Amino acid sequence: MAAPWHTELERARQAASLADWPAFQEAIDRLLAQWGNHSDALLDASALLLPIGELSQAEALLQWCHQLEPQDPAPLQNLANTWLQSLRQQQAMQLYTALAEHQPQALQPLANALMALGYGIDQPAQASRQLAQRWAQRLLAGVQPARPLEPGPVPQPGQPLRLGFLSADFCQHPVGLFLLPLAEALAARPDVELWFYCNSPRHDWLSEQLQRCGHWCSVRGLSNQALAARIRSDKLAVLVELGGHTAGSRLAVLAQRPAPLQLSWLGYWTTTGLPLDGVLVDPLEVPPGSPEASSFVEPLLWLPKTRWVYRPVPWMPEVVDPPCLQRGWITFGSFNSAAKWNGPLLRCWAAVLKAVPGSRLRLKNYQLRDPGLRQRLRQLMDAEGMAPERLELEGPSFHQDLLAAYGAIDIALDCFPFNGGLTSCEALWLGLPLVSLAGRDQAAVMAARQGLALLELIDRPQWIATSIDQYVTIATTLAANPQALQEIRHSQRQRIGASVLCDEQGFADAWLGAVVQRLPSGNRNPVELS
Image 1 (cartoon, rainbow, N blue to C red):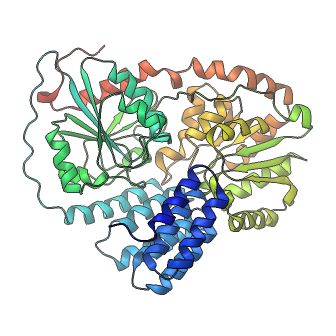
Image 2 (cartoon, rainbow, N blue to C red):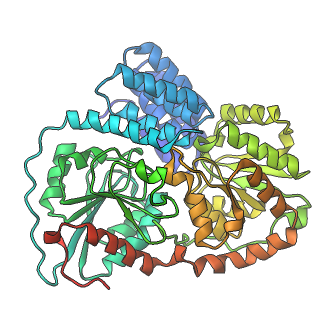
Image 3 (cartoon, helix red, strand yellow):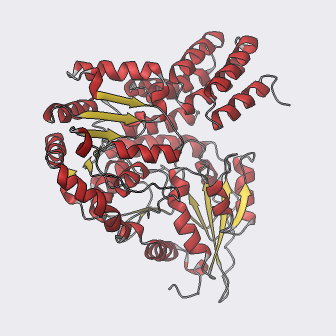
């Protein structure tokens, strides 16, 4: 039976989906007026506020919820989530750690700590491995011994290979967008049959596209044991988990061993901690023999060039001239999540602005809806000598409008140590140079080198920095030549389109080849890969 405040909660959710913010706030206010002293109502309301960037309001509700229920760890867990996104990553990490110590069997505090660790500065890759192993030990200690896995049926010539994907992000999300080209290429093959296990209620245009590629299974309400049984009954040869320790992940299902071959790929950037059969990586993000490579518990399956391909969305705008040609000043910009911001990064960006007189920095993300975050950011940049008028802060918008907003930026600045992924692809496709700092031996592991990987794949190594000083130098050198920015702007899309980053068929062949080679010999599809 639904809780009595769910009517107002659903009204707020519908208003948010339409960007009707007055109606959204009215529904939240009505909910709080009637159930503002009910801890579960406060938790539900904060869970809706946080992903749309209402960080301060979510924080206030969670603080009150903690006062009402001081023994309940949930308000503190979610409170740390708000800190992670509002320039208080260290405090968030400390709270996650404290919660993990006080709940010796709980998994979520350790999973969230792994997320926070990836956004931190000067945390080595081995720190991710150690924390992930602690999480895995807790998980496996509570798993009932699974019945022995029966060997899968040996495929007869001409029978398809049953391959499943498990995710909460089969929608307009970086995971869904990067998955779609591969899914369509595999679905076109007679020797592959796809299954999608969807752990989310969200269903949009991209979900529809994926649903056409294979069998669609909504699994959000299933327990780990029931979901494992469902996957086992589908007799998959391969199960690929796409979420790692991110929100909505069902990584724990793989501890039940529902498929002969279980892999991690795409939506997570370091080891899961579980003894899976492999993680799909590439040599640019995880160089063989590197500290990054040794930080994985799982065997590594190296794809030859890249671990993803990029396909622009259908509503991608046309390239426009760099705005500096009309304005007379350079605008730097970043549309990455505020969770990726940190002190060294902001000081680096301030140094870039100091080195380019009159320049501006435009930041845009959903968290910048929050006045508390905007104030905190301005204070930090003011301490670095940046006048308020040199910062342009913009909150969320629909994706089409966000992409159009790149037209107001001359040069994109990547975050570090957690680089952009889809955000960087979109900036590059719209003709912007991207300045990126290549991390080595960072807890973010693959995410600390995905900027390097993207720029190498499109043959722009001159934009890769190996130090903060070099990052500033690259940015200032680009800013000094507006005519070169114009030439880059109007030639880059063709360059990217002709690169391996957009070679969908080549990537699909390489991806499937790597997976098939990892299969137990009795489960390999005898159909010749082409």
